[in-house]
Length: 198
Image (cartoon, rainbow, N blue to C red):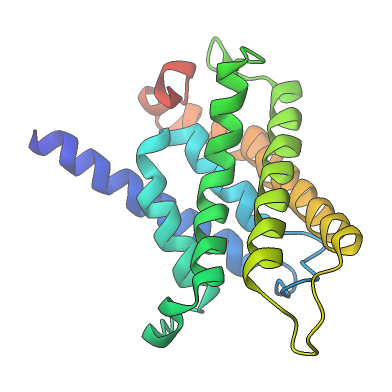
């Protein structure tokens, strides 16, 4: 029991650190209603789910919340419903994409402990789609711009979708080409495989 708890904490801490690192490496800062041309955080969350499975949801959510506040967490902002929903969407949409792909039997991400690039591409696009649509719903339902206008759907979806796709694919391909081979070389017992992300 204690070893499972230790493993759970270990995986969530690693997920927190990985997501935080990629968020701070992100070129530029995400702007509400406009987005970011490359949003690495969504790819980092996807990567952590592929490495550790759904068990890291808590670590991913905490990382998304804390990195959005620059680690200077302001308790008064916890009451901003749209912001909290946006954080939840950022942590949940990659998991939702993986679950959808499994439910419809669209792919396996690993074949004999080797990543399948075509499935990573589809995962990146589907994750970006879920994140964009759910974030658009949160903003259009809860937020009004400072000038009193509503969110413009075409511009919002175009900017967020492009940034999320690029961010997801950059991180996932970096993982496939650098991180997974590094794990295979330095810690072969911990190489990601299909049974670890179920």
